[in-house]
Image (cartoon, rainbow, N blue to C red; front, top):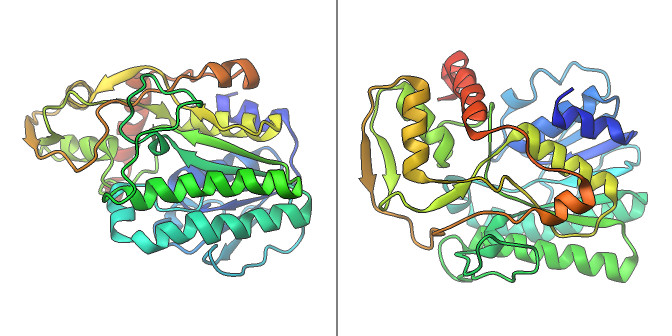
Length: 325
């Protein structure tokens, strides 16, 4: 049993609502929860999520799709006992294209998801992000660090939407006693990503398989910490079951520079691609690495899949699904 399946089996949820359930992480959550025996309602407006991500689930007993924008009123039928709020554009390509939609998902969308949880007496979990740390001056980043964020830069629509969502979740728990928690997800990757979503792993894999130059921004010495999707899902479900308020970091503390990642992808694909350096985006963080002491202590969770193994699985998926490139 993998990390995600084991975590889902530890707590038997009856009915789970996953907002953004057709997105990359959301669809993996839906599949894992459904396999554990829970009924799952996926709420998505397909602004960035894909029907292909949930096509295999649509005919499964217990799975319901509600096509709706979470920033507007929506209904999910019977009361859930868990609400996972994952609705938001998450890649730079998406949130730069949909700035207002991103802000609304983090504000109005979070409010409506919290209201659903409160009225249903359900557990609520907000998917926040390591982006709340901005371009950090603390390394690695623990949950006590307040961050270094540009509130009016190009990335601010995503950063501030998540920071506001955290504040709203905390206020809801304090004011109304809602059983609410926050997870801060660090860079997650794996099968099902879109090749053109702008994030490093799918971009590098797509380019390598096509024999194109891998485009590394800046000098390539900026770091990221990559967490394979099964590990991320396992951490999310552990946090949901633990009733921990948080926030709690869910990510892999093993760091890679972008140049190291590009070379690793070239090696694992057997590609003849070379590396081309391009301009680095504005406010791109120089370092990103989670301190997962809290997750280890309170959730008994840590990632198990190495970057090399996770990339092998991801590359295999992209080979089998060329339409995803």
